[in-house]
Image 1 (cartoon, helix red, strand yellow):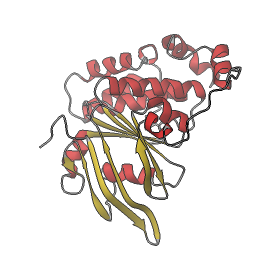
Image 2 (image 1 turned 90 degrees about the vertical axis):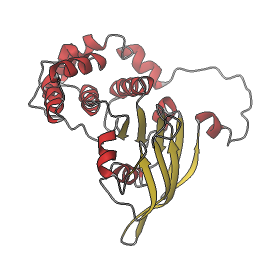
Image 3 (image 1 turned 30 degrees about the vertical axis):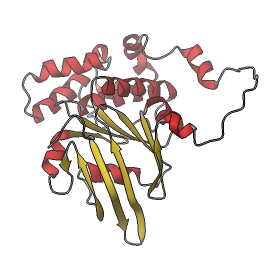
Image 4 (image 1 turned 180 degrees about the vertical axis):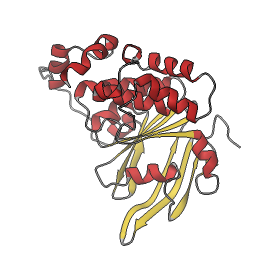
Length: 268
């Protein structure tokens, strides 16, 4: 039986091989409800394989896993009703407008008032001003925000984001980060896979590092930093980072997202 105290995702001893290649070698972790959990690792570490198993797209060779209290192997239909998966590339229809994409998914899920649902999500992800434009005119960040909005139709308690900022420019990445933080603030459990260290540092409540098919460390950012020797206190004049320079010139995202959305198609 699912309780608020039980983890949203529970993984023990997960193994997966492709012939002689052992991709997962006994993966263990838990994700608490309403938190952001980052699975950090380099390309080929097995991150996407974990997500595919948890979303019932792939069967594990050994081990157990449950999502929202349902076993991924024996209760796959219940798992699929509890989750949404956003892959590495935005799965949006470029011929349709932003609103039409959302309405379409709401209707496919047989939900009442699909237009109301679409308008609420457009507002939530700062896409209202671009609602009637074809998605082909959207920037990368706008497409990804729309993709995440589409994933939330039906209010799934758990969402998997598989490297959601791959290929995005710095400003679009920040926009996606803000959207992900809002998900957790509103109670959604997020499992995020990423190869970007700063992304895990910015977003995650807990971080697990997956290396050569195993979780080699799992903890909060503070706990992971404690694995290193104590820092020495020295006076160093702080120089602006490239990120500081970039956003000082172009403006920080989020403050006038609607205004940016109106003009972002101009550079296409």
